[in-house]
Amino acid sequence: MTTASQTLPKHYTDLCDFKREIGNLGSVAALVGWDQETYMPHGGARARAEQSSLLAKLIHERASSTKLGDLLAQCEADSSLNDPTSEHGANLREMRRDYDKATKLPSDLVANLAKAQSEAQDVWKVARTNNDFKSFVPALTKVMDLTKEKASCLKTDEHNELYDALLGEYEPGAKATEIEAVFTPLRDRLSAFIAELRDNGTPPKVDFLHREIPVEKQHAFGQAVTAAFGFDYKKGRLDTTTHPFCSGFGPGDTRMTTRYSPTNFPDAIGSTMHECGHGLYEQGIPKETGLFGTPLTEAISLGIHESQSRMWENMVGRSKAFWTWALPLANKHFDGAFDDIDVETFTKAMNTATPSFIRVESDESTYNLHVMLRFELERAMLRNELAIQDLPEAWNAKFKDFLGLDVPDDATGCLQDVHWSFGLVGYFPTYSLGNLNAAQMWETINEQIPDLDDQIARGEFGALLNWTREHIHQHGRRYTASEIIERSTGKPLSADPLMRHLESRVRPAYGL
Ligand code: ZN
Image 1 (cartoon, helix red, strand yellow):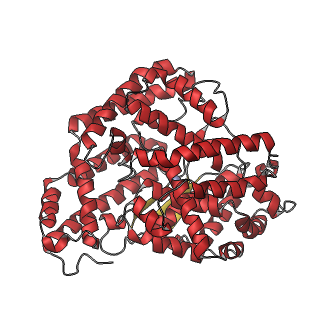
Image 2: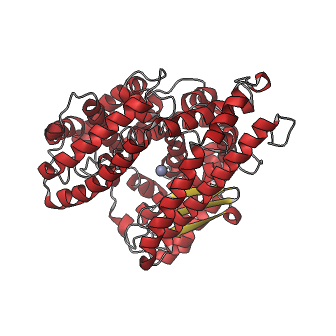
Image 3: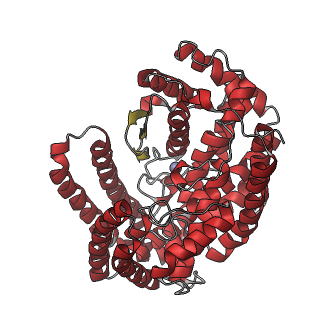
């Protein structure tokens, strides 16, 4: 990769230096955010809120500054820099995307939205506790109206509809129509698959998964597994939080968190492997090249980030090959807690598909149906095809249709997620895009590394990690998400690989 000091014009190196400064401020913001979730004493909350908002302000001021705009314009006018296939060409294209986003929203809209979001969150909490959707309608209506206004400001010629402008915040270049074209067949096939399992399958035995395992032992096991995956602990950490996350601070420093329950070992190891997938991506992006802070040292999109986490959590972490290696290791760490369980039985228990009401508690197969339901509803709200007060009815009807269950109340239905009170529209699809991307990559990887299962069963993950480094991580934001999928797998995104993956894992677990 080119470094900023190579013979490139001064306005370009100045631009990269300025972006690096913003990148460093971002690192500091990530650090105080991580500290708040992990070790900060409760008493520090108020001062921390002030520190975080000051950092956010400093970052926004620089990211939307005339200085940045002028340097960018100078570089764009320089014919020596405008080859779109070069690294600097890609860097400039993405910097323009970021700059336009940072400067397009009027400051009073940003302020109004922030105020409406914070009010809506408070109202949402009470509404969910009291199972009272009606009391949430005015606050949600206000947030949605402002979110539509935001979408109108962000909309460009690249977008077909308002939804695309919001989606672009998380999945640059993606279109709702393209997502719909993959989601619709997946939704129909998944619903039929889940009904078939319910009607004809025998659910695997899972009770042993909830045997009591001391938290410190689970932590040591999680570290051993993630170190074997290739996470570099000299350049990262694993800590504990209520809501697991991973934060790539900057060159040489990636922080993962996970959560533990003595009686829910699968949840902990699943979270740890998931966050490790994010961590491996962050460690694989070339941030130590002098270009830190520029788009070539950043992740492409949430859907690609999530593909890395889902691949390690699900494709690897629920496979028989993985447990062939990991079950004896777990028994060593856990004083033989699963000594009486064979690999076959253990793997089956890790591959259940049971419809349930709450998205964050759902399994690998049914999860996507929860996401698709939200995608369809939020798109309808944005198009004014669904009035806010009619949301519960629409939610419950779709839930019955997709997952075959009658939603008992709104607290377990349309009030369960915080996202919409934040105005987070266009965010949900990235979760399923992660699963779809991961499954499609997984098929290609297995074609290119035919003995991958044998390697995994021996606890060797290097070839797999190298594939992701070479095809995904090293490029930063050089390509869009759909380009990276086509380049790495040779075809556009499709629902087929994910369906094949789920069927191959879940059918045997249900004796089908
Ligand atoms: Zn994730």
